[in-house]
Amino acid sequence: MASSSSGLPANIRTTPASSTTSSVASTEAAPTLSTSVSERATDDSSKLKTFLSILRQFIGVTDIAAVRFSLPAQLLEPSPNLEYWNYLDRPETFISIGDSEDALGRMLAVLRFWFSKDLKYVKGKPCKPYNSALGEFFRCNWVVVDTLSTLVGQTRKTSILNGNSTANKPVKVSYLTEQTSHHPPVSAFYVDCPEKGITARGYDQLSAKFTGTSIRVTPGNYNLGIFVTLQSRGDEEYQLTHPVAYLGGLLRGSLSVTVMDTCTVTCPKTRIKVILHYLEEGWLGKTQNRVHGVVYNYDPANDNRTRIKDVPETDILARVDGCWHDKVYYTLTGSKEARLLIDLNPLFQVPKIIPPMTEQLPNESRRFWKDVTQAILDKQFAQATKLKQELEERQRERAAARQAQNQEWKPQFFAEVVAPAGKPSLTEEGARALRGLYHDNFHLEESDVVRV
Image 1 (tube, rainbow, N blue to C red):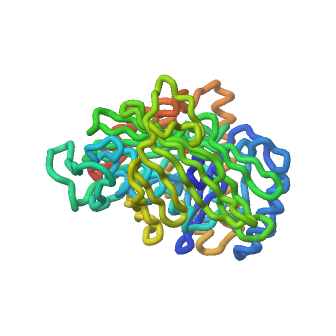
Image 2: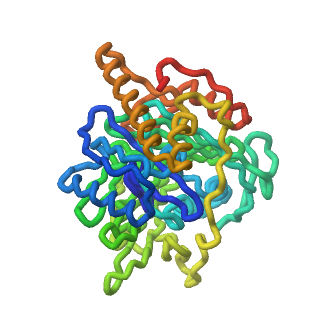
Image 3: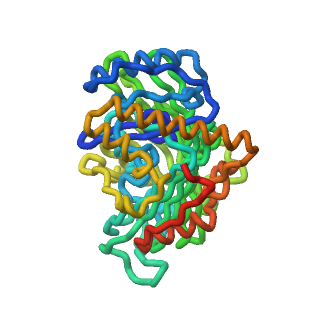
């Protein structure tokens, strides 16, 4: 549930045109709004009209994410939030971040990853997912061939496990995420590529406000961005912050995501920073989805520049310009040649490798929602709504029981519900689960603490 270069609220996601997906967020003690509609199949147009009529109840609400927002099944997409919400649409860009021997080359590789992680928005449509349960979790792998070249500097594609070259060979990336809080809705995530020595972690949380014509989405208090660490480069850490995004087109009946904000990428060890500025509305209000930015040397101890125009020319290493729906280019200082950073046109989401249902725990996303999902796929919307409401009521009952017993709930895979620095750490069980994923050993012991 994080804002992204095209972020959406935790309870509103996008569905790729070629498939159905979904997402989620839920609260323990939040106000509830009525969302009852007739139980019948709806097309996209009628779904949007119904959804808009419900959203009008949120005008003036400071944060939609703080409201229990439970829709009937016919307005949902049959896929869990935790499965949908990740930043690995193109894992090959992630595993190549540390390949360059040049610090600028590594920062440009981070930007290539940044612009590739949101293909679900570029090539999808907004949708409303399920609401995640406290303690619900999702895990998966991706396997991709290590083919991307470096953008600047010499290339070193080496496994830190055995020293062998990874060039043109399959590399595995493992992913674990858990809903660590209901109110506010927060999930922790951890990405691990042991062979390349790359990890990413953070908290997904959004704040969303309905203005009457659009939904303004900002990162929540605990969402401080994506933290990427390169073990192969002496634990270089990159912090990628999220911009503000807008879900518009509600009145036109054609939903779209726009970004009109500034975000940053910083690496204190290399002392290189990026400022990206998203521009959406052009002349006569035509959406252009443009982004431009600068890559420059900065002082981590005195980091006070937030605007591109405030960066001295003498500090600039490269400039970035393009369309985050299309192609993005970079130009090195001293050169007039615009080089391709990434072309999104031929790219689509890479499929996940998910543990079989027989190896999943009861609180694992696909198993937890499987009956609701099947009912939606069968267009048995009344049954799907009934099953969904039963799951949600069970969560409320268990939350009330914990409160009555003064029992503190703790995550299974992450050490904290939220961490002040925005960087979740794994429990021993979480580390063991990720190791098992990497070795295709999916067996986990069920924990009494998180049984949902």
